[in-house]
Length: 232
Image (cartoon, rainbow, N blue to C red; front, side, top):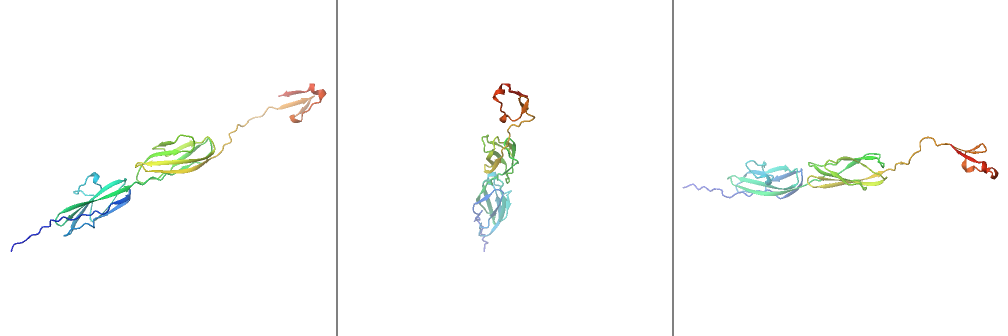
């Protein structure tokens, strides 16, 4: 009797799992356990980003499960290739949507906060694995809004006392925006001119008598022509 050899010509069915939405820099987990083959699956290979090319000769990971993190936001195509015992292969893809983590704006101010005095403002903004592209400061008065990539610390002078709302708005490199507002109470400064030194003395004489109280000075009618005032 002859030997009949039955070759496996049915490729496995790869299953990369459902699409996922995650926050950037958080771990993403993958499993190929839903992949099937009549004679068993011999190997699993993973590529985590089809945009930079899929090459299963140098896969990003191997095994039925895999993990990765994405430091930047975007949509990434993950590809799973499974190989059965006959060497047949198939692939499946999964879309991973990575959401940007916005910065957390915050700042401190110096004291005291009085009019006509420079007040320091210092950003204490925090951000994970990204860069701040812009700082924007609104001091709540008629001054121009100041903005720039390096404006983490600056000073501002209020010319009038009062209550002002200061707002710091930060934008990261991915375009995410966050703001923080605080109330600044600017105190009044008594800047009226002060008289220094000694005022000149005033002597009022009536027939040789010194009178120091101008409001009480009165002269007799008959002596009025003899009155004189000496201003010294």
